[in-house]
Length: 463
Image (cartoon, rainbow, N blue to C red):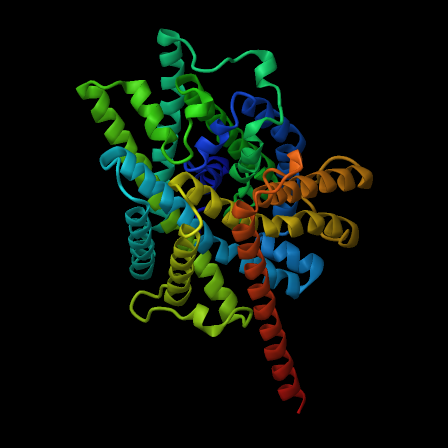
């Protein structure tokens, strides 16, 4: 039987499942009404060229490696190994942020006085529950991803539509004038990198190009996914801001607080808040299960190629799952949770510190992807490109520079959120900066190990 090729809609849903996250929606709302202006600006100057570049690279270099392959073709195996390291280890760093939000929302729903210590214990239990699921199951990965994507759409739609209904009955909680919606550098500037983070990951569809009916459809796939994802983020942000004054938007409890306002204190209202709150918590677990499965399998494959330690490539004899990579992910997550818990005074601070740390690592490969695009456009003119970004070489240099600078400023603002105002909060910044530097150093050690192992093999073959 011939393999079934995928069309535009299934591939767009794949991208939507991977990119759309609920846990950072409150960070967007915490910027205030001006977040709408920032959304519009980022979509025009960054997401549009990002989508075009992704479309060209995906159609010109189809394969399962995606960004790893592009970086390797442009800059060689050393930078490709760094890309693999950042992509994999990021999940273990991101997991603590997602699960501290889970614990905070769980507390807000059922146990309002739950201590930070207890919430940290919940995070650790969830971490190892995720590792266990990933160790004993492979087949449910796609099912979990698609199911949780539907739940995400439901939650964000409820927040958006509910916010409009609430505002029609009770008035809006914030001023939605043209001037207030314009981009501004106010107290919410620290959360601007979250907008960039929310829209990253559309290049993941590149790993599915061999299953596409026609790679020329790639621009339609990418921009359909981008359009739906951006619309949902904006609708959800507006819904929260229509119901809650911006100063009351908590990073962890913001979604539950909004649901309480939308549905009220009656029996039905409480039921809806609890039901939708539980659904939101399920999406957090689903996110981590699906990303851990995907990243660990990629890391295990890299280990089998000799690019990561052999322990990472260890697989289960019974289930054929990447238990080595999964367990290491769990150990990294647990270590980060315990370390950052010592510095945070509240679950909001704990969430944002861990989220900022993991996001910096997550964005590192994109600092390589955009220059790789320009390098390949200049140096590899012979490869057929079913889709090409319009414009000459000057245009390509401009959009590459813009995308690179936006990613770089997001990384800088995650680490130094107050630098625009000429100050640095070292109590916040130092743990994140140290964490990023340690992650970079470990990656360099792994790279040196790989180079030494390769040199030994080459010398052995020549002997």
